[in-house]
Image (tube, rainbow, N blue to C red; front, side, top):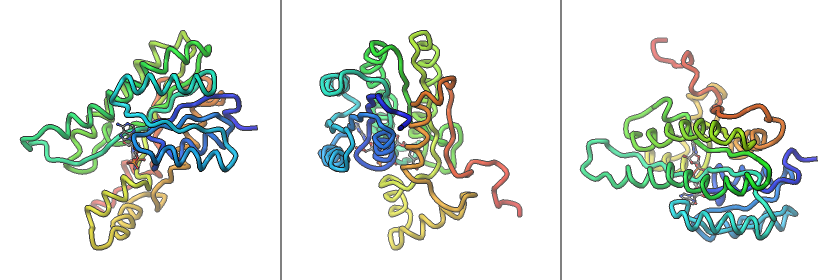
Length: 263
Ligand SMILES: NC(=O)c1ccc[n+]([C@@H]2O[C@H](COP(=O)([O-])OP(=O)(O)OC[C@H]3O[C@@H](n4cnc5c(N)ncnc54)[C@H](O)[C@@H]3O)[C@@H](O)[C@H]2O)c1
């Protein structure tokens, strides 16, 4: 028995990183999963999961395009008959200096991280209402509520906005029996974080990863699967009285009293 038996779930940003972990755990927990991302790699990953015996379908979708989001939801209904769970995970993170003349990086964050979630919720919530209720899980971040380094203005702004959107949607759709929650990951080992490590220490990216790990109380980065387990719980009936909240998953990295400063 899986905690998502009988559920149909859409996961965005499911080709790699956290989204691939969420899609995999959802499938392992019995959901029929529609995996979405921009490139063809999401089709290959859905095929891989299907070959392993899970019910999965891959769809190319750019969440910044509302029509693409509507097409994604239609595909889920055409293939599996309904939508119970929407997991909005697609997101980007690029660091930049706030005073730079060029604000296109700000707009890119707003387009993908905020408007992408907005578009997907708008496309999928009517289908979830038709299914008699369900759940939405949004990937925010510990960044936004807290900020570790310079250069995170655009990213932090958009991830903080997602906490507000989570609460507003939880309130607005409670009567239709839709629960909405977000997860706030700390450092999770994904292509995104590996790219940042390669930028900060081009000679030895593993050294940068080790430096991050040594600052985390649990002594390591998290895994996409661990995020998937949390999302599966929030999406399942086990979390039936949890809505409008954010859950931190960070190995303790944001515990305020674990800094080594002053020791
Ligand atoms: N990795 C971390 O440590 C970490 C920490 C906190 C929050 N997050 C958040 O988790 C989410 C996933 O991060 P990740 O580290 O797995 O990133 P990643 O770059 O490894 O994967 C991102 C995924 O999002 C998809 N995507 C990006 N733009 C898209 C678009 N316009 N339309 C559809 N799909 C799109 C990509 O195709 C890919 O599948 C993001 O929202 C990110 O902000 C990550």
